Image (cartoon, rainbow, N blue to C red; front, side, top):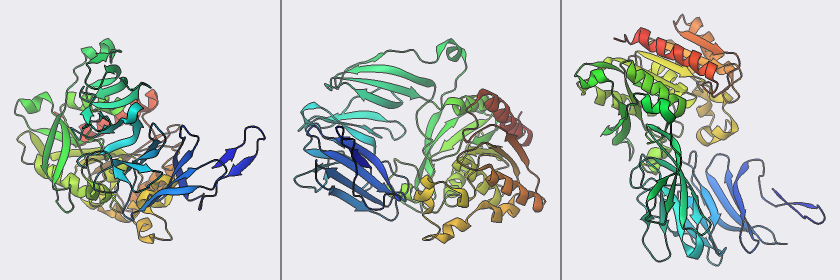
Length: 469
C-alpha cells in the first residue's frame, strides 16, 4: 500500500512488514484526514490496525493473535467524529464491535456478548452506532442501532436476511432483504422503530404461481464434542407425501457451512423446490465452521474438513431415523466446492451413511487449494500433515453411488483435482459417474445451459438410486 502525492505524483510506500503475506482488509480516512489501515495475516491468526497521520510513520493502535482462527468476519470503520475506531473482531466467544480510542487504545466492547455481528459497524451522527446481528434469530441477519447512552434497538423486523444502506443523517434505512421463499427486494424503514415500506415487488407472476414450499427450522442433539455441537440447527423441506404419513427419501443439500439461513438461495433454492415436488425431503444443517454458535464450534473446522464435520451429518441422520416420515435407507447428499469435498469424504470414509451422492467441483486435494484457503490448511512448511489429507487415499472405501461434476474452466478448484480422483477410482475398480462441462467455471450452475444439463444429471442420479416413487 502506498500514498500518492496528488500535486507531484510521488509514490510513497507505507512501511508495513511482510507485505506479501499480509492482506489489507480495509482502509479509510477519518474526517480529520487520518488514514486507518486494517491488516490480517493470510492464515487469519494475526491482525494489525494502524493509523497514519500526514508525514508520519504508521502507528499501531490494535493487534491480536490466536492460532486457532479460521476464516474471519472482521470489519472496521471510523467513528463519526474520527476520535475512535469501530472494530468488528472475535476477542471472545462472539464477533462483537469494539471501540478503540486513539488516546487510549484499550478495546471497549460496544455490542452484546450474546450474538454475532456480521461485517463492519456503521457509524451514525451524534455517536450512534448500527450493526448487522444474528440476534434475535441465529438464522437471520437484522439491523440493530444504539444511540449514545441508550440500549440497543432492533431496526429491521421483516423476517429474513437484510443487507442495509443507512441514510447519511441516520434517519432512514434502505434494506435489500430476502427469505427462504422470497427473492431479494427493497424495503424502506423510517426511524429506529418505523414501519417497513416495500419498494419493489419480488418474484413476479411466475414465482407467485409456483408451489413454493417453505422450510421448517429444527434443532436436535449433536455430537457434543465441542461447545455448540451439543445442539445442531437445520432447516427442512417436506414433500406432500411426508405430510400424509408416507416414508420418503431424504437428500442433504447443498451441504456447506452457514446454510441454515432464512434467505433466498437462487438456483439451488429452485433445485430444492424441484426435489421436494418430486417427493424428496430436503435438509440442510449448519456443520462446524458455521458462525452463530460460538467460537469453539466455528473453529472446530480447523484441519477437520471431511472429518469431524461428518459427525454433524451423522447426528442429523440419527435424528432423521426417529422421524416417522424419513426413509433413512434412502438418503442422498450433494454439494459443490467444500460441499463437494464433504460429499466425497462421506462416501469414501463412511460407507452406508448415504446411498448416493453428487459432488460438484469438489475441493478434495489440499495441494491445489488457493491462497484464501491458507486460513484452514496453514502452509506445507508449518503443517505438512494437513496436506496429506487428500481424498485419493480413501477412494477404496467407496461402496455407494457417486457422481462427480466439474467444469474444465474451473478457476478455483482445478479440474485436475477431479481427474486425479476419477483415475484413482478406476484404478481401484470402483463404479461411479462423471459429468464434465467444457466451459463451466467454479460456479458451474451460473450459465443457464450448464444449470439445466448438470442439475438434470444430479436429479436423475438421485431418482435412479434413491428409488423415487
